[in-house]
Length: 94
Image 1 (cartoon, rainbow, N blue to C red):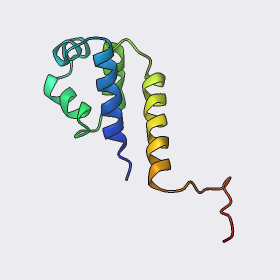
Image 2: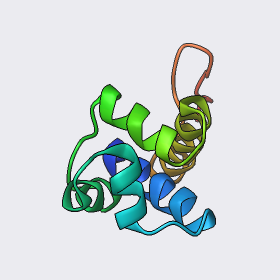
Image 3: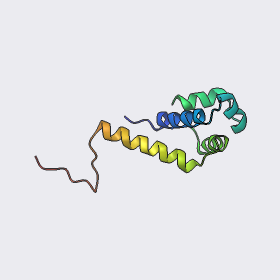
């Protein structure tokens, strides 16, 4: 099963590290406890939309970019877990 919160945490951590920021720096900038950000990055806690907006502002990146990266990872994991089916996909007859 694909866990959105885990993938979101992976993206946030990668962005923080690309910017060379510590958890402490993001925590101070976003005004969110360091421990809570750590739990979000590890996929243990869900981030509210307000918290996510604060983290994106602290990382100086648009929310849309974070969500796009997470969406790409979700699609990749889904493709590895099960074949895609839906209204636009017609399974072949065997």
